[in-house]
Image (tube, rainbow, N blue to C red):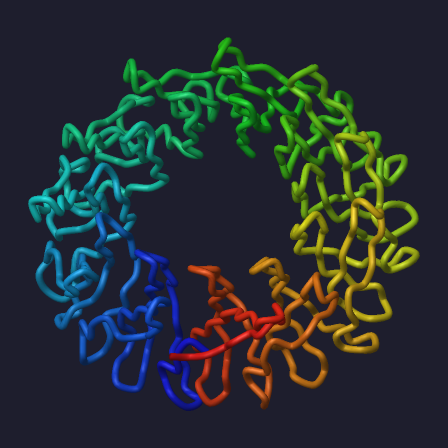
Length: 535
């Protein structure tokens, strides 16, 4: 355990774990302090209270964001006013940066973003509503960006993205409706980038996606419905990319995915149904990639996944059911990769994961339930790795991870319950690594995490309940790392690797759920000596 912040059976409730400047900052609670800012320093190592900002009830720090060596966050002070605070670890000091809205309500700063040496955030000063503000640490100045909505209703900022050093977002100025806005920190200006629909009606730009120096998004100009648009910062113009479904109908462009400088997405042109589309900004052209289901109406491509220059996804052509498809832009072709369940049956593949040049996923066929499958683009093969749970039963493989050329995952063979499995692509073998809880109960291995060339996970051996386990490929064995809670489950989760250590939360019974740390120490013979400790 890293630290028993709240000694005894009480919990420290560590939340909002934020790596910053080689340390781990979080919100925590101990017997003397409600929710305050804490830090764990792996170099010392120590876990300490950073500041008791509000001694009579907790400051509840959140929205932690680093800028120029300082940590900024929202916190509630002595008068219940949530404002912007800053911790400088070099001094160290923790101070309130501003009090935009004096009194009990506070300005409630949110959407913090570090941009060009300044901190951009949304806040409500009680007069302008929620608007954009800028804090410049060089001059210790806090200034309002131009008031987007001059009333006190606020501009309702959302869906922000950074492109070429500028901040783009959707906002409502009270006159133009929700439109595309831009803040330029270099010029210290905030302007309406594009008023796509004149008047108070909104175009509601959403799914902001930068590509090739432009911003792509979905918007409704009140003429053509929701279609694909682009904004060019060079000319400061927003133009419809294409009216895919002509007229006021909406194409519903979604599942945007970038591959080799092109934008792929699902859309409905009103004729071919919802199919795979492509926009190529180099030409420029927007086109239907393939009408996969010409007779059925829509193939509904989903789970778009890029692998080695190709786009893989699942779709239904109306004849083969929901199966694995692929688009190769080099040829170009869009083909059915495999009819895993022959005929009109649905393989309903899920868990698509690109690992080591192959595509791993879970799917069902006419002979078996959900089992692990793999598509190898180099061989052009799609095969079931193994029928782990024979017959129509399902192994429900999940949590695919790769380590040293092997693929690890959790699955249930119907005899041993859900345990840790491994696939060796070279030997073409898929085997149970260890029956941690002998019998059909299964250890319910979960949270597979690669750390120090080993697989760490939570599992229950039937004796120690759900605790931290490790599989060592060199030793070829699994072992309990520590029985953190000898009385019941510690249920380790939220695993985070930081500076050569594995952090996670667990319930230590006497300490409640707290933040713990795992450090691997090697003996002179390279034997594994795991150390779980608190400073």
